Length: 300
Image (tube, rainbow, N blue to C red; front, top):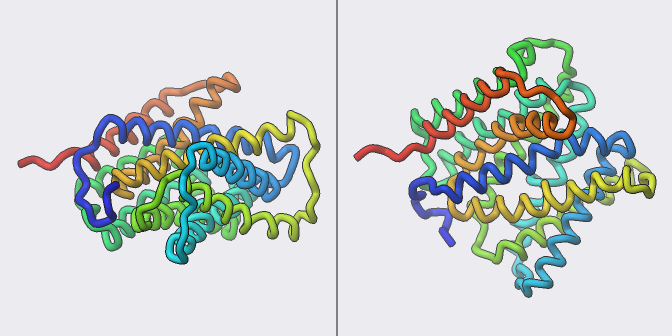
């Protein structure tokens, strides 16, 4: 496994596949959450999601006989990952979207690649800020603006606190990829299991306190959403993220936050018969061009 100080080589096909996998899976989250909150609060949905994810990865760890991480340092890293990568941003974004529209939320989530670019320049060796990376990130941001429409930038109807909450969630994700890059070498499955156990331990008491332990209806229609969110956009996606983070720099991984809204639109077209407009295709083209410019090999 690469250490945090290792220089990053050229982008490989497997890196692109892992990035697209993350964007594809996380792109289903918006649709699934929209269905789930019809049956339970966003906080309860998040708590059940994290409990399911923790249980799933624990089972994988037992089956694969993966060693459980030990030592105060790795536990501190996993606690931070659970907080900044799961429990805190899940809560901030779900609460934030109660007061603003999805277009403004998409713009605010796009804070993540920009934040990651700056943090990575100072905190990750080999991931320096360059004009090519800056141009690529800006091009991707323009793609998001094209996707949701310029009005999302100027609309004054959103509540300030809700906007700050979504932006805070995006910054949490930026901090997460930096933390992962600096973690001591540990088995990926064991690290993911501990992270989600700690994340569930963080959110469940808060949910019990705020929501009073009210359970959702015990029906398939109500329960499939947190189960799906826990198994795929959380548990499986975390394993892919940890693997990709061991091979690629944070600024590359951050581009998935530009791709997630695009894939969310495509999932809506596939499952809800929504129309994929030329505007969506243009946004996708801009984002892919941004990824290309930011990660193309240097000449000479």
